View: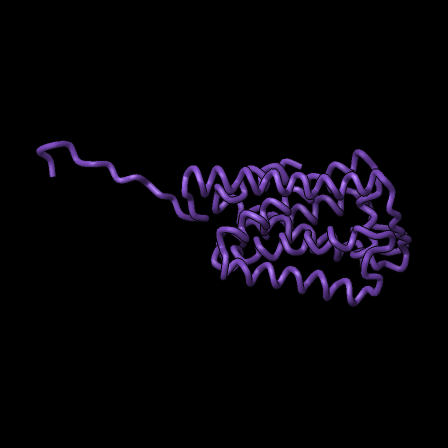
Length: 220
């Protein structure tokens, strides 16, 4: 949840940390999906430790790569925001808005690719929107580990295709509240980041603007 707060508050403000956390979240997420879908019927030895350590470990690798390949990762920032946006959209109906698994994946990948391409065209605005939505979704996602509203089940239904696992997703009032608060936090974060970075400080992503100091009289 600390990562989520960072994205919502400082996602646009800082360049390298945002790229590092984008790489971390992407690699950790893909690792979790891989582990879940390949988990044997008897489970992994020390299942919780396997999931946490391997996902976090490869996430750290992704963080390092994200900072090093910054010219690529900047597009991944938009793609990650589009990825979570697509999952959020699918979650607004019991058993998901799109029920065909292949169509779900195509929709998610398609939205992610569109968001990544838009970074090239509208970098400032898409980075703000993407970091705001990534943070908002991750915050409510993490909160649901404690609230147990059922919002997590949409994620499991989409990405957990392991035949040994049974997943179902039902829409309840508590789930609708969680999904709605994703939108509320997203709008709040977007407004804050736009005001603080663009209106107040006229900051560009990855560019530090330093005001030129006028030379003292008589000095060149």
